[in-house]
Length: 446
Image (cartoon, rainbow, N blue to C red):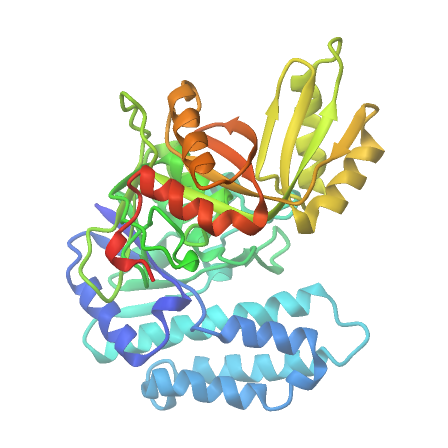
């Protein structure tokens, strides 16, 4: 049986029109669809505020009830009404438990998971009203197991493969699976990091050996430039796994940084495309080794610092770099870049993480450590561009000099070249570099 996993995030769950669009998309799928959904737009943020701020808890249960009934009036008197009322009671009870001093993480995780459970009821109910036989499937019933032994919570693919209740997915209906959370091996609900519904979807694609994974978004695909800069980027038709991973780790919010790992192992293609408009989207698959290599996209960050570990000629810099990276990840710091030479290691971290990173490395390494000035970074992404990049570095350096921008340093990592410049000039640099590399859709520049 051909299987496709389709994930609809919160940005595709704002209005009843979105539900109609989901219905039409599912009607046009010839394979067996397995649907993964996030909470309705804004619901997770509302639940987080209620957890963190006691004054935000008043009236939240009624607010959330109305939000879901507006999206799906059939929940008031339909096949899933009883389950809807059960969840609302459980939510109200757990919110009340937050007032207790003994309330802990388990209650908070349960509260956050209710967002996905309610959303699954909304989507399943409305699809049924429109004529599709859909059923909500909760991650705890499916038995998606969360690995809590690692720093970043993830779905344990090996354990889940043994325990997953596949009959819930392959009855004669469309399963609407709750994203973002699962259970640990004791059956306690655990949520993933924000954006983790992508991880749920890619994990299911792996576990089911799906033909493809489709991530439905409110944008037409991955763009060459992040839209937040006000510079119109072009849609990227195809990205290799390493290129897409690089963009995800460089702050491109359209992809969760760990969601590609499961599908990459099996070579499952991923399509990112728009729910509302017709677009070919962006296909992510095996790396294409173009000759010569080309820049596919550009990422940027305004406030970063370089940390330099002076190792000396007698040191094993590769070993020190691996240990440094492990220590930073354990401390909750994700470096923008790490590069080692024969006698030194250079890291780029966000300014917000710089003090934590410096303290962590200072305490755990016996080598000289220096912190650089506040800077900005432009990161060019493309498979193979860092292997033989002399001409590209010269081209970008010349372009920056032409608009009187100073280039402080160049770092390389897999599929990425990083240019460290003055942070307050990052927008100007991005405009110029994207122009010379033909990454802009000029008609969209604001």
